[in-house]
Image (tube, rainbow, N blue to C red):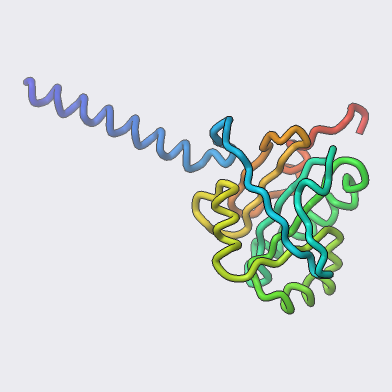
Length: 174
């Protein structure tokens, strides 16, 4: 009888631990409150250095992507539309391509990307993703940072325009 109780307690503890692990893997926004965001300065396609600090007062959405990534290509038209809609006063999207610079430049021009496109070739791009909280290391990966420095969204996999809009802090009446 005692063995049965011990096994039941172990099973309950294991199930609770598994549930907690599953929840932490599915919670794209779960972050330590004191986690400092990394700083970066990366040249855009025109050769100008860009950093998130270049956009004070705006929410910055950092989108890690690649031309060879179908879900990345699927979400870019929504990002273009959001930049058009909110870019003047509220939102700045930064696209960080983990890809070949020439391929990215051709793709960005062809589809009309209207936000800074930065390119990081090699493992450095994935290291930057990890520093921003990517757990799986897959693309696309999005991080939204409010002007106060608070992370409003971390999302691995394609994100929709509606998900991004729901996290924007907009003045009333917009």
